[in-house]
Length: 100
Picture 1: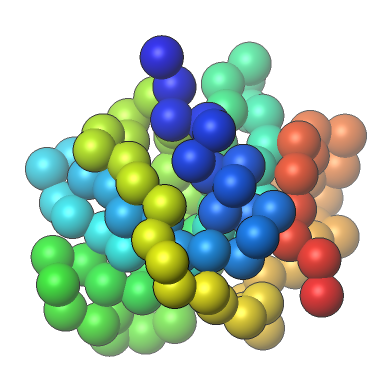
Picture 2: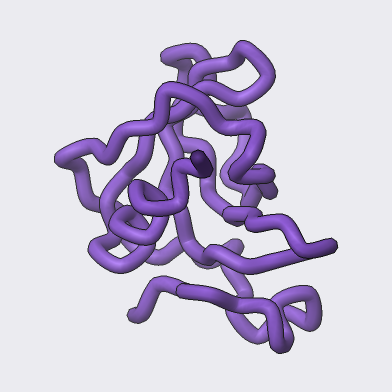
């Protein structure tokens, strides 16, 4: 079962989501859910990586199938300037994106 419910909630309500990806713990600000090659992905801004803040603010892509121990946090986030909702890779594949 994919952790899509938690990510739909995180995107819809602008709530942070914690998850493990490739044995690394992340706290994410999920901005958009979309499909690529018939698999669900989330583009999110990592707020923490193994408990540490990131070196730079960037949008990272995560395949939902690779995320484990997913939980919605009681922490809100604001839309990041690095997120471009009109990017070509989202054209026709977006399932849900944050709203301003």
